[in-house]
Structures are given as C-alpha cells and as structure tokens.
Image (cartoon, rainbow, N blue to C red; front, side, top):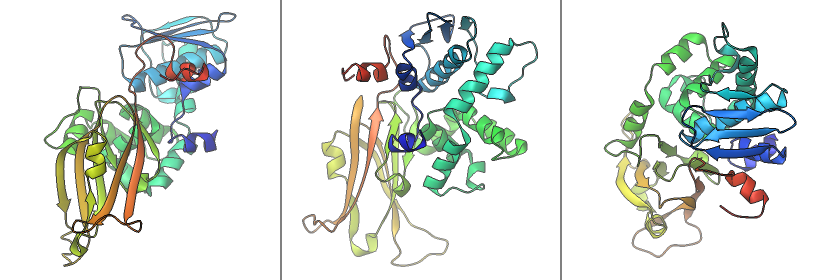
Length: 313
C-alpha cells in the first residue's frame, strides 16, 4: 500500500478501498447525519454531500471501521477526528473504535514520515501551523485531525499540538493568499515548492495555488508563465523575493506566484525557467506538478467507483 499511495500523490484513497472491498458507498445530501452504515449482510455506507472532502473522507473511513469491525448499524451525527485520543466517557464503544480505525487508516505514522521526508521538514518545521496546514492538505485530512495525529504518533508533544490547534485555518489561508481568497469558504490555499516536483496534488477547483520557486534572476533567468496562462490559470500575484539575511548581490531570488486554477478536473501546472530575450531551449529548467482538482463528492457513487466501472468522472 505504501508504494501505491506514494505513486498516487501521498493520500490514502478511502473511497477506492471501499470500492475494492465491494462495499456499497453512496453520497446523499444528508442534513441530520454525517454518515451511516448498514451492518452485515447488507454492508453499505452512506456519506453526506454537505461537508468538505476531508470530512467526507474521514466519515467514510469511520463507517468503513463499523463495517470492518462487524459493528451493528450506525447513524453518525458527530465524528471525532482524533481516534483514541478523543474523550470516550459516555460514548458508545463502537463509535470510539470506529474513530480509532478511521484515524489509523487515513493518517498512519508511515504516511506522516513519507510527507515529512519528501518535504525535508524537521520537528521545528512541524511546530509551525503554516507547515502543518500544508501537511494536512497533502494527507487529505482536516487541519485538526492532522494535529491530533502528530500527537497520537508521538511526533510532537501535547503542548506543541495545543498551540497548533489554537490557530484558525481561516487565518492560515489569509496569510498564504495575501490579498486574495479561495473561491469558497471551505476551499484552501495550496503552497507548491521545488519539493513537489513531479508529484500529484489533490484539491478543490476553488482552491488558490501559491507557487514559490528559486530563480537565477541575476543571470536573466525567470520562470515563464506562458504555459500557465495557456492552461487557463489566472495569475493574481507575481513577485520576486530576495534574501536580506545576509544580503548577497547576484544571489538567486525566490519567485512567488498566486493563481486561480482553470477549474474542475485534472490540470498540469508547468513552468519553464528561461531568458526572456531568446527562445526556449531543451536545457532550460522546467517544473511541473499535476493537480487533481475535483473537490468533494457531490452525489451518487464515488468517482473511484465510477473509475472501476470504466466510466471516467
């Protein structure tokens, strides 16, 4: 599974896992519940369409826990995204077990290690809420659930996690998007750097994309946005940042782009570093990531289920 997840961008596809287990999964606009499951022999799961993709994923994993652990049928109005760290007093034991199953299924320790290594993050980085926010987007989980996982896997101490959880996600989005906001309140701001080269990142068509890349501006090299514009991206901010500690003349700069993606579907974010006075050459540096911007499941069968049926959605 670990190799498969890394090849698919670093998220565990719970919807695909449910489809592979031949468990019926349907998305409906439930108003009074996040999800529900039908026990054996029916083995069915229903998840609301009225919440974010991260909540849909955790709810589906929670309901999968009920089915896998052979629990009785359940209608879940509240799900705690903290697994065994959640309060158990007064709660039905099968709900506690399903929460723990979901947390371990979607946010295992090895997946944290995978992303931390891929980004060259240290423990110091993980105490920064901006970093943890980006970690949560790569793992396909809510910010809060990602914080609880850092504690549950003993990556950070409780005091550090308590500080992280005080940060408002809206504040993190505002800081990254600067003067710009995602297309809706639940969409995110995805920060992309050199560490993401060649990967597939998942998000929402209303997300903002922030790209930060080193460029040799002193030699006339700049990242061309031609391919980006041709692909339908709307560039909102385009600036260069220079290190001042210490100030080094001739040093490389860091290019910052904030853009709106072209919309729903799969798109390639591609840039080429070249000199403006000449035509592009094969030796020019290039940067590319694939963005899978489908957002939450909107009704009926999951996209993973449709793919298994040979119907692209």
